[in-house]
Image (cartoon, rainbow, N blue to C red; front, side):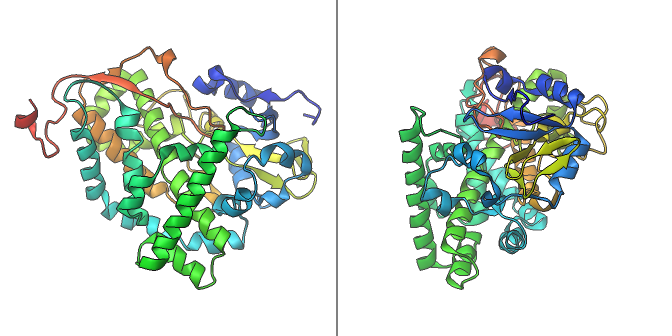
Amino acid sequence: MSPSSEPVELYGPEYKRNPYPLYAELRERGPVHRVRFPSGVCAWLITGYEAAHRALTDPRLGKHHSRGNAAWRARASIMPEPQHSQLQVHLLHQDPPRHTALRRLITDAFAPQRVEALRPRFQAMADALLDGLPGSGGTDLVEGFAARFPFQVLAEVIGLPEEFADRFDRDWGKVVQPVGPEDPGRPAYEARLRGLQQYIADLVRHKHAEGGEDLLSRLVAARDAGRLGQEELDSMVFQLLVAGQEPVTNQITTALVTLLRHPAQLATLAGRSELLPQAVEELLRHDSAFELTTWRFFAEDTELYGTRIPAGDSVIVSLSAANRDSRQFPDADALRFDRTPNPHLAFGHGIHFCPGAALARIELQVALGTLLRRLPELRLAVPEDELEWTPAVLARGVARLPVTYGGCPYAGSGANGPDAAC
């Protein structure tokens, strides 16, 4: 494919509702495609499992924004200054050796043994949220659970003080959704950005004054010791607050939508909790909340699978397209809880593999297990085509998930036991 080929448009309601037919078509045509995003920026999309796996470990592809060329920068650097320089130097935009040093500062907090030990605490959080839902009838599971549970878990894991947890505005998470300079929503976008930046500054000051052994306190201490720059500190806090919760919220919703489309598998999973670990892996593969990776760049013009990629053009890997490649996953469009092995790429691969993957897996197991156990006869309250899929470029999820349910939602769990609820 030549750079002059007409780009494939990766946006619009139909695409966001179900991108998989387009991904299947692109995989058949080849591994590299010129695409266009809502902001107008064009990029090179990698599809297919083998090509994606190689790209995610290709040392020639760097992630630092300084690698981007003028054409990319003109449309893709949506976040204005000074925030771009102050909030965009986190792990996702770093290369070794700096990436290695920064990542080392956070890995202990998300170590599998540590987060597994917190599972009972997470379960109590999930049950408390379910206790607050109507006993029967219906609710929006995003507002009532999916948007709240991951944030509560994150606050516990990173050491976010209660008063700051109460202050956090979920609307700030929209700062990662592109809003171009001419967009009518630009003033609201910049207001969100300033609000979040002020919140981070207040939080850093609080942690500096209070001290402690939690992750946020240790990051501030690393700044004070000269091992972390101020912009790096603010950017890492930004990444933790935004990337540490919104993808899990989205993954809970995509998993639930998938299960509601497959009532037989939903019923099986509701009755057999021992299937949860394998089921979560398959749900991650089947419809991943991280649909696309963030930008990568070649430092010089490079031939990739027969396509010439100009230096500084953005290269993006489609994780969702890779996870539905039938050459890697037989019957790839089917939902199969017995699929093994299941080497999906929902958390990426290589040095940028999601450091919070173990935590996310536990959150999903707890969330789905609790919802299916405590909300019997779970079903959509609206036609599926009325679900509003988030317009975020890289992510998949629904903004609202109206459901109905019946029976006794509290049976066998929570402070309000069966006798109190039924």
